[in-house]
Image (cartoon, rainbow, N blue to C red; front, side, top):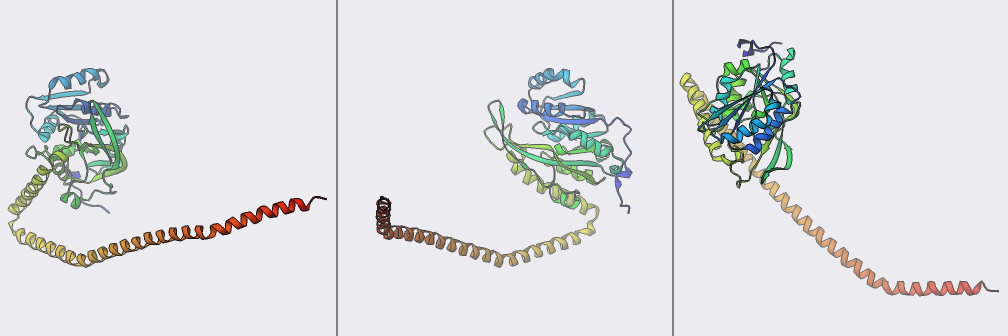
Length: 357
């Protein structure tokens, strides 16, 4: 069975060397940038070129790290300095315009990869059986950490999200499902999708992921080969993740972004206004009905919790009663034990004398 897939409308990449263009944005975080460099350099797959965009940060910090690692990069590094910060998506676009290769990925300066990440993702997209996929994503491990002085201290690790075997477009439309660090895209798809939306100070990766899926499906590799690092301490504001530090902006632009897309769709097809309103009303009614049906269930759960609390209190009282009973039994039986011990001693003495001739 054949399904429609707009990926066949894209002009295939002329490059056949499978080179990966890695886009890395940074600003005044040399401690994290050093780890990101190590993540790229540790890849088993070595056919890549790294494009670092210093978005308004201190030039010297970046240049020192580059000089330190110049011999191992072996000419596979391009650095772009912005005198003034232009924002994450504009920084990505600066690298995008310079990038060359068959594949592209955004590696933020605070994230990292398993050494086999590029090897397995490039291998997936190069497999003829996966030629219809526009991109591929791997599982993600979330690493919670904090900055202590000049050290990165790992606290714990969890699976970021359960990765489904397929990326569902309708689910992605409601919320972002994955981080840039886990997504390798065909460069021919990127050329058709266009630049990152520089008007979005946050959520630019969600917008870009949606546009990628409009051209073709995204394959999946369930292994957790990408590491999403999270820092929540507000004491080191430059190190806190944007999703934590700018939670208000995420909510604001989530609404504005969805409004913009709906407005554009309705301006193009104004006759769909009634359909959207009807669907919105139906969804609201279904949600209200579910809430009404949920209330009695919630009351039953609360009542059950109360019953459990009562049973627990009775169990504690029973335990206390048993302890008191055991104490009384010991007191009552103590004289009997004393008599038994005396009698046992007399029996031993009698047995000893009775054996004498």
